[in-house]
Image 1 (cartoon, rainbow, N blue to C red):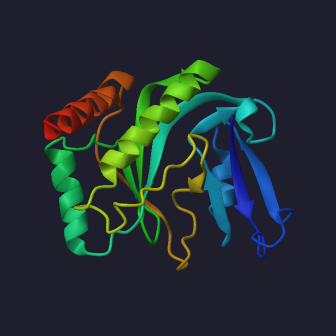
Image 2: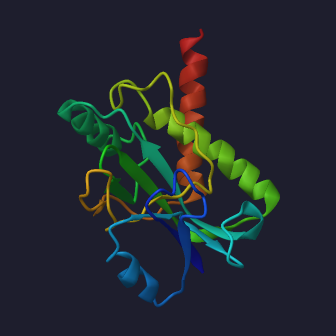
Length: 196
């Protein structure tokens, strides 16, 4: 099952101002959560138990990358140009989260959360994040946000800071680890060649 967290008013001041919801395959809880005016956070992870701690994580269903610093229309044009020409990996979904974007790379098969696999996936996410946070796409390219595999993001259909709804767009296929690794190899080759 997945776990969604509703941030109640004043949640930033008091960590007790949150409510956790277990989301089962029937997704009934999602319908209820989307009626809320509060922020709803969820990660593309399935868990055992009622806590979102990493020890309870069982499967990673997608890599999610937060992308901020999109200050011009040209940044969006460049993002989709780089996706089309595979400068960066093509995300399965692009989510408009209010101030930025979330890129979701949904795996063809969920990845089990064994410690050695999680360590390698964290390195992969870091490499993909650095590749996506380039100067054509974001004004913050010198300070990419490297986030945990377990980071939760605003749930699609939930509220943004401005009070709008987050929206998701299907932009690609489900991905394999091999596909994402290919971009790390390209990056390594590019860095090695630029040093010669």
